[in-house]
Image 1: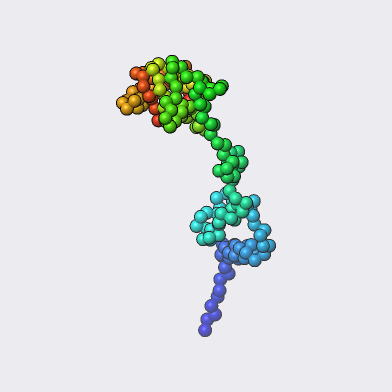
Image 2 (image 1 turned 90 degrees about the vertical axis):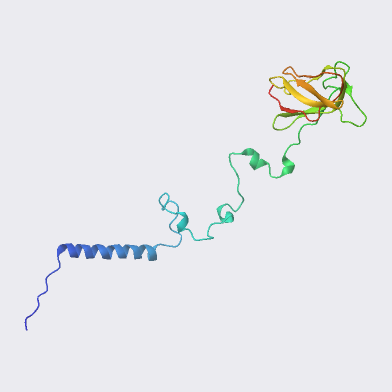
Amino acid sequence: MQKRRFRAPSPAFVIALIALFVALGGTTYAATSLPKNSVGSKQLKKNAVTGPKIKKGAVTAAKINPAGLTVPSATQATNATTAANIAAPEAYHAIGATGEPAFQNSAHNFGSGFSTAGFFKDREGIVHLKGTVAETGGVIFTLPAGYRPTETLDIVVIQSGSASYVYVHPNGDVETHGGGNVGLDSISFRAEQ
C-alpha cells in the first residue's frame, strides 16, 4: 500500500486561518470581557443606534426626561406652569369715564339695559369695541394711540333696526352716520398704530 503524502498548507491558507481565529477571539473578548456599563455614548458612532435596534418598550417618556419635558429656549413655557399664571386681558376702557376718551357730538350710552360703550385690546393685539350708543351722526369718540388701524375700516352694523356703517379711522375717530342707536358689539380689528 502506498502512503499518501499530505501537502503542507499554503501560506495564504495559514494567514486566512489565523485571521479567522483573531476575528472570532476579538468578538468573544468584547462580549465577555468588557465590564458592565462600560460602553457609553462616547464609544458609539453617530447614528449607530437606529429604531429597529431598540427593544420595544425600552424607551419611555419617563426614561427620556424623568423631571418632565421642557423647552429651554421658551421662557414663557418654562414660567407658565398653569393657566392661572397667564395674565388676564386688560379691562374695558369705558367711553366717557375719567381718564378715558369722551363722547363727542352729543353721542351717549343708549341705556335701557344695553351694554355701555367701551373698548379693550387683547393679548394678540385685537381691539374689541362694545356698547349701544345713541348718536346724532359723526364722530362718537376717538380711540387713543395703540388702538387704531392704519387704514379706514368700513364696518356694517345694526342701527335702529337697519344696516348702517361705522368707520374707524387711522386717527382713532369712530364715526357713524344717520342718527339713532348703533351697536358696536360686533366690531373687532387689529391695532396697527
